[in-house]
Amino acid sequence: MGLRYSDLEVGLKFRSPGRTITDADLVGFAGLTGDFSELHTSDVYAKASQFGRRVAHGMLGLAYAHGLMWARTGELRETAIAFLGIDEWKFLSPIFVGDTIFVNYEISELRESKSRPTQAIATFDVSVVDQDDRVVQKGKKALLVSKVPLSAVAASGSAAASGEERKS
Image 1 (tube, rainbow, N blue to C red):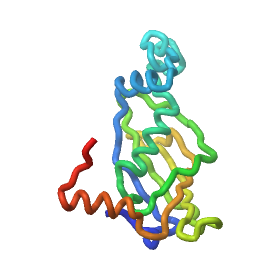
Image 2 (image 1 turned 30 degrees about the vertical axis):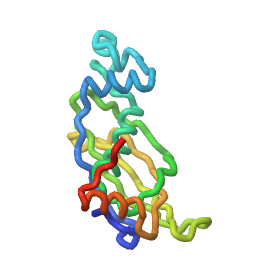
Image 3 (image 1 turned 90 degrees about the vertical axis):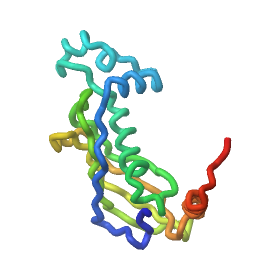
């Protein structure tokens, strides 16, 4: 069970589980995005670069960080409605194949929605760190959250509890 709106407060800190970056991640992300830059796809090219080896796409790190923050942890399952945006995002150091990334995030602002009385906006200070706790990316992310229990969570919970499965 995740946190409810009443559990959220400025200063609340989280840490995601880790995710090790693999060669398959770089190849898959290149195929998905069309970014086949040799820095990501060629060992020969990357070895001669300032990094000395292939570097993960910066956006791959950002995308995985987003998934690690909410999809894998479930902390905000009871409240998360929609991702609203990114601000002040910086790519500080490269992420390499074999690195394990974690996400440290803290609620830095929590405010009521002006247009939706049952919703609020949570802003997080986010740091993506590697296995040596070196900050590789950082910035702010905003999330629309519900102040009341989400019916989708209740529906998925009752289906799971009764053993029902969605049939395609």
